[in-house]
Length: 113
Image (cartoon, rainbow, N blue to C red; front, side, top):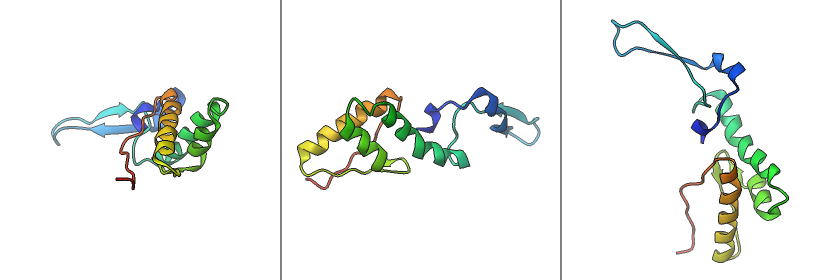
């Protein structure tokens, strides 16, 4: 998810890395344009961005938007449903809402064989 989220240009200056392939080379400085995994802000983004996308989509599908708002743990979506058909429908609707924000769900699992 993180590489999809651009950091505001005014704040990119605090996201720099330095690199060289060997000790003999000069350090090169790179500015990172996207949210970087394992930074302090990444946890906030993983928690808040799906909720922001859901809030903007709330009128279209209230059940799926509510699931996004309440059924995420960090960046894992952990909903529940009474039937397999309901679970599939909910996941498809959630996937559609998140796709509108350029996010994609992976790693589906179910207790239903």
